[in-house]
Image (cartoon, rainbow, N blue to C red; front, side):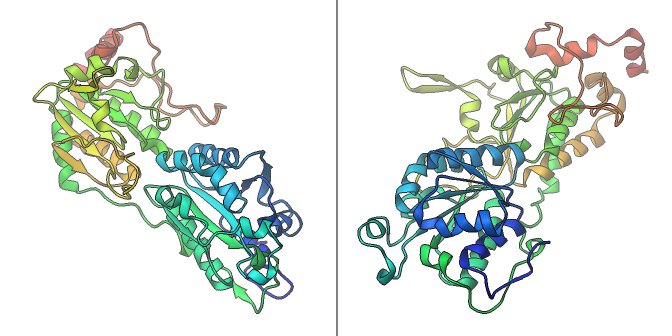
Length: 418
């Protein structure tokens, strides 16, 4: 039973553990340090190892474990870095989590800020005025709360900011003395259901209708997938959209966006397919310019792969949360249409819009389905299994979508043209 109120007989570090439990933090990776010895003690003795501790030999490793967890499950994991020196160890891991849009609840400690409580030498050289200064340019948000109410509010906000799109790491730094001091009074803990990341953005319906018309009228549509499968159902929706259009798919593997053995996956022959495309759609692609241009590495020059009349649409939140420090935002790519919803809505709506406009006979011919998109309930399937699809037969990748229809049994082809 999760605590609703915390107060007498509890310590500041117990409060932090209660907050982690309330917000569903299952694991916390750490390299032990004296500034968070109170929090470490509470994790073991007060929280009964919930969240479960993952012991690491370096703070960068702790952050990278949290990064991998967030990337795989799409939700935050905790990591703790010991004061200034531990945070400096973690900086590279934090930067890569920021660039990869991975939600991490990174915690640290400093002080005590009350100088009269510091031990000679060690507490002084490890205390900084604002501990987060070295990482402020590559975390979504940070705070060094003061007092019980501030600790409660900032944790709720940190979780919300980390999980809002585009996601990213946040940092909370706790006073060493606060962790080890008893709490005064009683404090109501926040309800996670009332401090959530909120609902998803919706795309402009008129823009999606226009995009659907372009896709349906195209000869060779190409979908480039970047981060869209951070929301797991988008994996299956992209399969539906590609099959409805007979569109080639290039998976940039920023996330696992599309089945590797699907006949429409032509990631290995992206250049050839893009050169023949008449409509290209970037789905949460971080570097769309790099995706549609050839690079001469020695001369440092680029040239477009696309035909001059190819229409380009980008569906992403490109400059939302853009960094004013790092150039991780990449070179700007001119597009014919920019659509800015979040991924869980955009791909489903694009698929539905395309299906409404596509004549049933042509839709079946261009996008036959040789097996159910999802396995029957009675069939045990590994958790990572994706949609069932027809196996490859060595068809040239750039024309695979047309050859796929041609390989159907005669009866099926006759049905599609009736």
